[in-house]
Image (cartoon, rainbow over all chains, first blue to last red; front, side):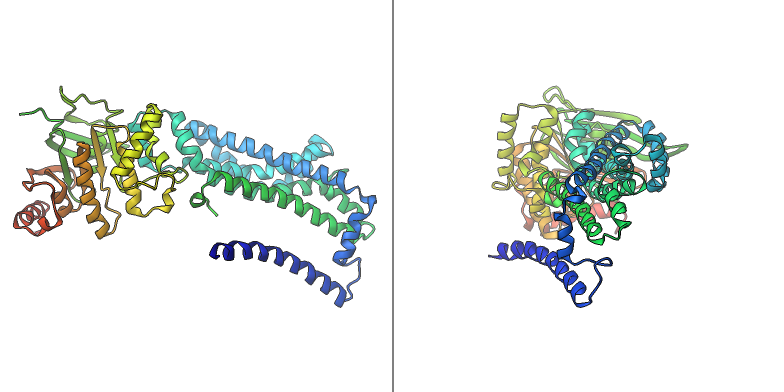
Length: 255
Length: 254
């Protein structure tokens, strides 16, 4: 019964808060007589989704490809680089300060350049998402791989364990909570990166669509696009959370 | 007289940091017989842990003689050392049984036999039924029991303990002392037990080696003539008091 009390209302309350937001939104628009072009009601927004003119599915596919593509590329490259750093002290001391400096570049500012180099389309937007998602994953993974108690190291060394054993049995599983904490931050950034890319220069995608309908003050479509972008982000974030639950023991999770 | 299992003569250890040298151990001389439980007692920073690392083969020494093993008890430093630290240092993501099995995995021992042995050791340390729990589900004292089982799983000849009960509350600590004596008797291991608890050193040891601080010098090395099994009641005996007083005096605390 206690268990039920704890878990059921938690999910119920989460759903409730989302529903409540929609209700408040509805009441605000209706009672305040807010014009549709300033803020459409939830019903008007949903109407936009049913109209075939916007090509929602094609645009969702493009934006999702950019977000997921950039994100997984960042995950692969970030973890691989962090690994290389733990294996080579020279590599780390050479590249890490440089990477920290590069991290200071506002990645969004690279957008116009990336578009000059790679033209319009899915590729430059994927690269913007990648560049912005890379650093949190790289930095937290490198940190996690370094976090090993010296005595645990003694224990493995005392048994003449190999570097590979140290890595697979202690470092990598120990770093997983850190990797996931970086992955969560990166998920949020990847979404922002892809949309900024579409704003800067693109001919498809939800961000591009928003700019198109803005000209005609088609606010319901803009609202719907924002909701869909958010849902792609939530899907990515939810996937990361589910994976974390699967791979990281409760006690070891960082947040 | 039997050959000692550990033989240290005038052991010196110097740490170098840049151009600065720091003498950690100036002169350690003592023997440990096979199957003995020797307490190494001294103030913090007196080089006790350094001495343990030398025994574990993790650090070299800069002078003197270190010999471990004898003709009757061959010693392979990679397989014959078990280590227990102040923190249990269990791997959070492994169940207790898998934590205990870690040294066996690293050494590449046959796993079926190791698993059986690990189960037996968990019973020995009083953790039967906790094999599938995660470390966070166990109290500090229980985690340290698991760490002791881990130190024994590859059947080492020598177990090195570095203030293993230092982080436990006083009552749990007393209980763990009794447990350790039982485990020691049943396993027959040679144990070197580092502590800064003077009463703990006397209570556990067949022998106590007293080290003084900065740099570690061996101040005394004497046998504790109290019968086993030891009981908490012995702590109130006069002889027990004599031993602790002797150590206090050596450490200049009297």
